[in-house]
Length: 87
Image 1 (cartoon, rainbow, N blue to C red):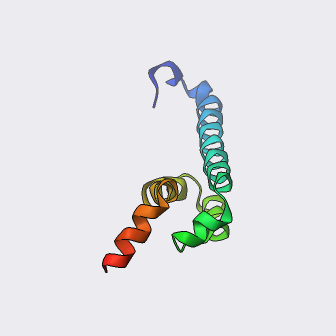
Image 2 (image 1 turned 90 degrees about the horizontal axis):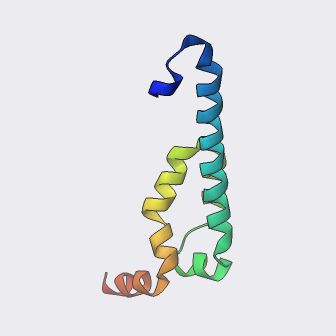
Image 3 (image 1 turned 30 degrees about the horizontal axis):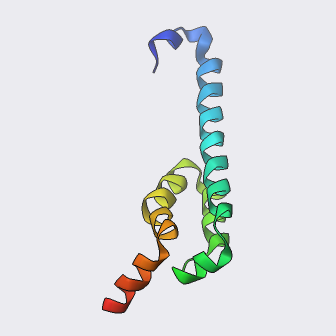
């Protein structure tokens, strides 16, 4: 994986680094979900509880999905409401 960790005795270090990065990413995702008030989540018609549970259950793939699909809507909920009116 990494040139510095290429020895077989360093397998535990590789696993530790990978798990630490994964846990940090999950903590960031959950913390980012909690940063926005419930009113913003209701405005974009999404469930904060569901996204937090998805991140805790599925880990980094769910965090990436949250960042790609929901985070930008939370940052600019008026844009979502405007697009929703056009449909």
